[in-house]
Length: 238
Image 1 (spheres, rainbow, N blue to C red):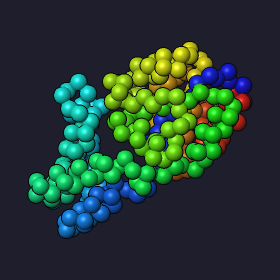
Image 2 (image 1 turned 30 degrees about the vertical axis):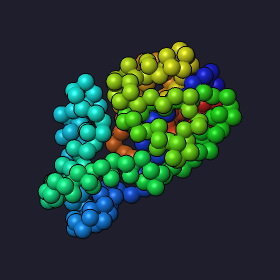
Image 3 (image 1 turned 45 degrees about the vertical axis):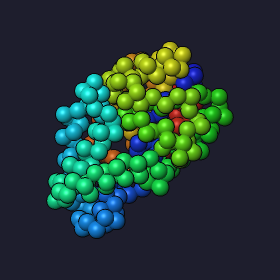
């Protein structure tokens, strides 16, 4: 059995996921303003805009003079421009609305087993925190989804100044938890950013690998979670 004192969690696609594709949410906002654009075009444009912004201004523009809100507003507006919408007044209004909409629980849903697994971890006396490549809206999102109460701390890449897989964000989490690396485990769905990065600083880690996820590097079976509900059994086997 692993002698753990702290478990840290990724959030997006580990505990929470979007209820619908980004393109559908953007399409609904556009329709509310009388703008007709296809959700598939918006999804494609979002991937392009998000990728370009992430390369130009990593980690929400930290240290480059951008706030995370400005970073996201620019992504949303560029998404609509790439999909053929160019009216600045409407773009600004839609970007502002969508920025705040994604703080709401109506845009997020829990992954199967998330709430039960967090509750069981608490019952076992495990302390928990969040380590997520996310902006400062995450506290509100977790509260809206009734998950914030499970965690001693929520460490976002925006607040830390480092994004996974940079080991410094995990080292900061260990300091916040007051534990040694071998006393902590991290749970996430990304091999490089979660599983490998946590192990590189000496933590234990488990990779959530849901059905249909292929093409990832081999991970020992004892480190793979087919669902979140498998976590405690793997810790006990540890």
